[in-house]
Length: 462
Image (cartoon, rainbow, N blue to C red; front, side, top):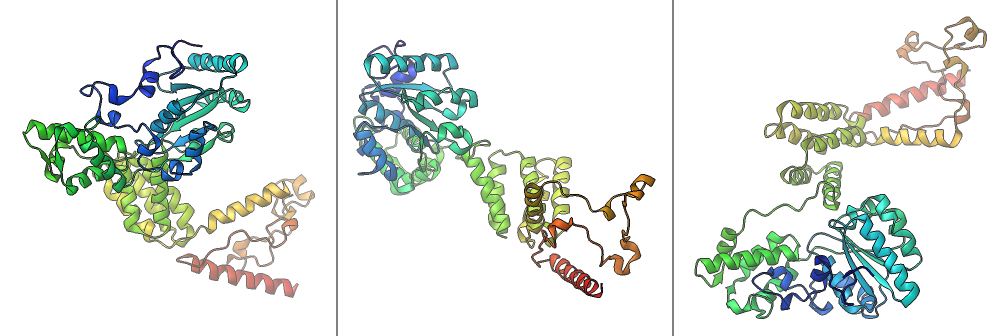
């Protein structure tokens, strides 16, 4: 066994191991942050996540029975992922080995997996491996866990702030139970803050501070569902208050003690995908106010404006299409204008494009038609091009019948060849593009109906 790797089973332990298994209440309060001191020691102390660890819930039963399956715990910061891992460490009789994907390397992982195999073979001892920030591992590194999870050598608990569908290999994810932790609600954060204020052992109880509900509500709102952030904000506010000689925390004190709250947004994480999805769906749902809000969420949090403009160019073609052909021109123009103007002036064309797209008529008929045609291509293979559509540009081609009986549309009435066929015979009268009849597509529908009537008339005449 590597020195100090297993938690609570002897050995010195590295910093991460000792931090995971140590009791914050016994640490020097002056050197330990409030959020760490208040970390729950039992499942009953855990605030939130009742769906996972409430009485009779599956994860709670598994922890209490010491029958933990391989898990991927995912959720926003401060939701309780590391706390649950710590509770497992204290409850299990298995070797508990914590590992940080940020601080550790591949060589250490190999050593841990080798020790787990030895523990199982020679001592019949299970190993629970907790990998914090597992999304930091690349595909090859995650693949290293697969055989050990499959044969039961380790029980893997991975923690990530990112959606495991994107951050964890499909093969590894299929062998784990993914459990989502939700951000804490405001009432749950208020409960946690009140508990910290009165707890004399681990909290701020010895300071005998008072706080009104409005002040605690302001802290809870700033925390945006993050327990650690809320406790850190409370501690900073208490320090600020004591320096000024006060004993009562008010909203004014909170606002003076805190800087502007950061926006929870990760350019590559699950929050990123969530906000982008909301932005696209708001434009598709023709809600310009919501579309502007989600665009502001991205831009104010530091998202690359060109990413936003590219999404609008895609949307203009995919979701507006021929219902308003000008939408694509507006989106492309906004993208080009931003590249010439930059910030902050560039926000004007982006906002204009956003509201134009959100209020434009919508049709996905073009991309739906392409997908239907592509499905026929995949299903039927490379059907022969009809001879009359082939180029009769050489003598040999003409002798083979290329271009024979081709009708040049511009020489027909209305530049339309009613008797000309363009699809392979095997496809019959297949239809892929089915305009919805909204916006400009209403004119397209009328035109297609007229052409269909003329084709039918020509066919009857023949």
